[in-house]
Length: 219
Image (cartoon, rainbow, N blue to C red; front, side):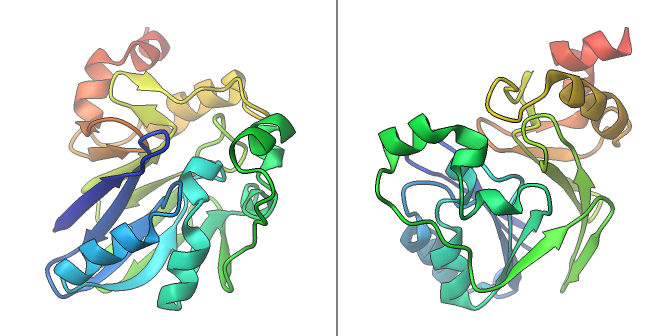
């Protein structure tokens, strides 16, 4: 399986490109900011991949900024949980108006031509890739984690190596995050390779044993 990542210049958000092999169909996850569509296109061209979908783990701008040029450029759909969809075209919902005015003043935000709303338990089947969406609120109301082929976990800003996503931004909730960690993350299989929204890769086995937030919930 091909797993490529490109950390976006702002906030070092990991954009993941996943395919079963060279020359195969691929998915693009969380294209960040500023516009990194050209960088992603170079990786896709080098591996001779064919994008079939772009997945968003949640609606924060550092994960969605490049979604329109990528999705529309390849003629593919963007997939996002129903509760975060409106943030694509109105990011101030999840960031606050001050953040938007400070970083991206006067930019017009538009949805891609095709947007598919996700719900908990939805399964997406592409060639060689079976992707299960698990609603994992806390960081945002519509945060989602994706299990791919029972091998990979795209954890977005829910789970990091040694930490978890913040919950002090607009519409974040520590109560919801703790419930997500206990009921959605802890039951996952130890063998899953974890690809987070920021920082290095990890595994469920390692995080279960070492992540202080998960250890606290197990005690």
